[in-house]
Image 1: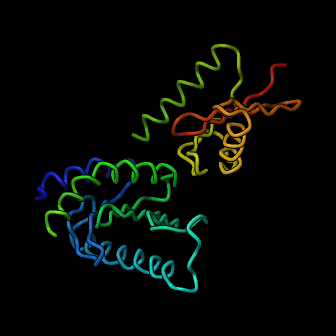
Image 2: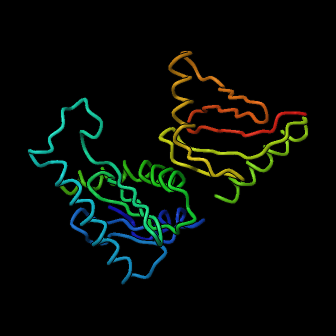
Image 3: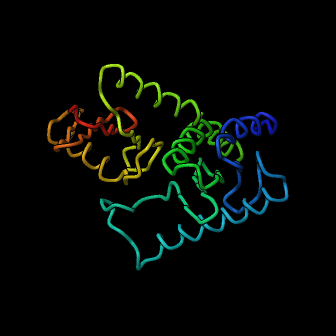
Length: 135
Length: 92
């Protein structure tokens, strides 16, 4: 089972240096753990991140956009990086869940991606074990 | 962590300066061309990452690329996880 307090502490370790909030959520948009923003904002971020990720996955899976396996962009969607006017966001797939990071505009995209890669690698195995035990 | 990264870049520039190299700026990006940090440089990191990758493909191993013209030179080096570009002024 996941320890909620330990999970929040892990998320808190990356929520610094311009990263305003880190959220762990299910594919359906339910909030699992968060750090940075308050619970109300974290729930909104979780819902939005899930929706954005699902929308991109749907586009990739429609018959009209089916890509051959050896083409760039084929395969599972791993991460979305958003660069907006007032901030940046990264949404990554980890086991059967999603992780979302919200950052200020001052954070470089490469740094955001590097932090997300590190967090995803760290959480991959524990979350995989949890999802297997639930099945 | 980002502050530590910048301190690392600053100390690397100091070392260059100590051996008489006039560093104009430093750019650090990942292999996809996404910028990690930069100092006094506003150049897009994409071509830097692309050049480093091309050089590695051509030579078969990690290589330092040197682009030089009359006034400046650029040194591009690919490490395990990042690409570093150092922009310097040529010695008079």
